[in-house]
Length: 379
Ligand SMILES: *Cc1c(COP(=O)(O)O)cnc(C)c1O
Image (tube, rainbow, N blue to C red; front, side, top):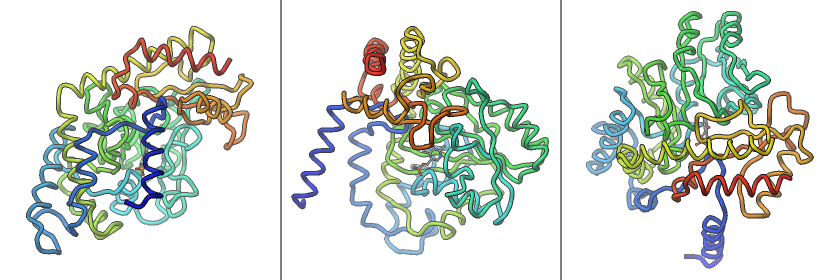
């Protein structure tokens, strides 16, 4: 390996092992997932789908992709899956390609309130090529379903997107279904952040309610970096598959698909349910400490791995808080809060996630200690 690369790799390895990782979108994949991500499947071109490839020599890629599809369908209880999206954003783009025409109206969660770039932000293709409208959260940080309903009735969007990158509470998927039905919209649920908790049975599944579900595989689900699309309606199969290939991607990353299969198998084990339950318990234990010291947590707590600390009345902005925590070896990210008094680059909150350190075996007592350190730093 090139020496410069080796040196950088060694530094990153040290950073990952010496710091407390509280970035909500990160995790530590298993050694098996890591090994498969760097496996010989990276050498193989397999454009198309199992049994219908454009290249020869695909018998083993067919087997691994079929295994990944079957396992993920069983894991989440759905009929169909596409495991080829290179990322969560690509999965969403393909769903747009499959069901929308440029200019169609979509209604998604506002980026500043905890939504994702790929749900209609102006700087993203989802906002640039589609007519995107947003809903947000109330002053306490909760989704206001009555307001979302009113907005949907007024707009009549072709698609409603539910799902978030920074929302600590259970999202009411049934309510979104009701709203979508009332206005004749399609419902896309992007469960990127919650999919590991859903697989582990500690967060409600959107599968019975959504027309299409997208997810990443590397957040709470703890697999390789990548995306998936899940659905139940047979009529969508051709549309979605052709929106991935040839619609928005070329050859699939077969080494990553092999690692995804491993991830789905790991997530089907009982151990994974214990991990998911512990992730939520750990987040709630941290909230208890923050509340005890008078630090405001949006919505007052959490139902997931996510905690949003509101620093709008603190002397430190979100950026300063994140930098000060990094200086003592704790990695978090700054995050906006409702009616943020500070700028987008400064922000008045931090987002904390418990998935990664739960994977490393930390329990509530350990997370309370970390919360105490965070309190000390911010005081
Ligand atoms: C992280 C995330 C994505 C994007 O995933 P990438 O793999 O980074 O493209 C999409 N949607 C939501 C809700 C996310 O949290």
